[in-house]
Length: 101
Image 1 (tube, rainbow, N blue to C red):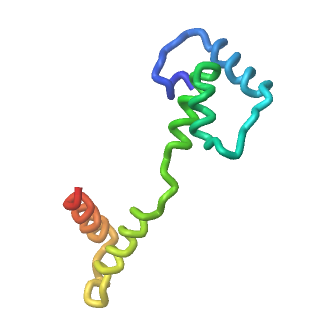
Image 2 (image 1 turned 60 degrees about the vertical axis):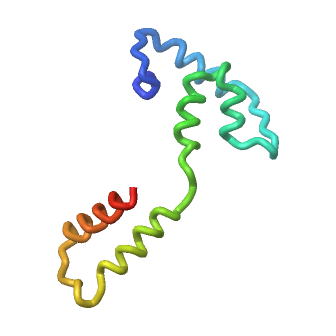
C-alpha cells in the first residue's frame, strides 16, 4: 500500500493499524451516499485506504469508448480489407483515435 500512495515510510505499523481499524469498524452506509462520498467522508480516519478506494472506484463505468472503437474497427475490416494483419488494424485504430484528440 505504501508503493501505491507514493510514500516511502519504514514503519508499516500505521498501515496495518489502519487496515485493522477498518476491518473492526462497523460500516454504516446510507442509500443516498455513493461509495466515493463515503470514502471522502472517512478519508481522515482511513487516509491510505481512502486514497486506494478513490482510485479504484473513480473509474467510470461506461462502455462508450470501447463501443466507438468496436464500431470503427468494423468499418476498417470490410470485405475488401480482410487480409490486413492484426498489427496493421491496431495501427489504423491508434491513428484514428489519436487524430480525434
